[in-house]
Image (cartoon, rainbow, N blue to C red; front, side, top):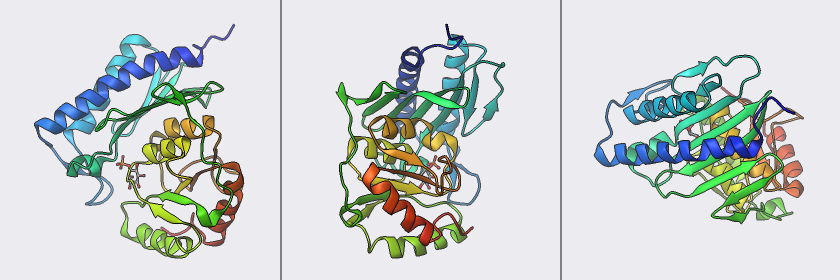
Length: 269
Ligand code: LIP
């Protein structure tokens, strides 16, 4: 008998907590964007809502499972006791969209056990769209089980990507994209990694890649994409991480991977 809750039980904890967080994000946006500060660069913003939503989620999780750990974008790692669940949270993924009022910003919450994500939920707080997944239990939205794209031709791929906040990194990312864009159908830049990954899971994008993502950007959305049949990984056998996250249908992962390696997509600043 495992000492850890089953994936379904972890999801049953995550979903209401994430829904309440999304409601807070929506409410605070409707009231006013306040306390806008910057982090790594002048365009890497954080708002009072980011921080309030993270505090709310941590408080809710602490009430339900007091010994678990939480890794959040704004307050970092709250240590967990050995053998506890680790929750991975982006309180508002797509903060620049949130700042401008573009209707794509997400609460992303995943539950990790022994380093493996077992359950995840991503909610577009602007629209209420909600994606969930459990390891081995599939990916779902609105009661419908999701399957990723069946695309087999890189030249027909609608490809999602994103860019960092540092101008030097963006210069390299732009140079990579200038080549890649000639080899695919087209690109889309949503500005929300968790929604990009859920879009791959739902087949709204054929594939996605991005350098520079943190665990809270891809933990939940990566499980949604993987449970919908996409391959999710880094380059040259690495797991998804800061150097690169790639999500694509099995027939596309290889050709996209090889193009990213050829173009040194994980390089640059
Ligand atoms: C965002 C990511 C997105 C990336 C943006 C930004 P944030 O996260 O979700 O994929 O392209 O530059 O990093 O900063 O809004 O939480």
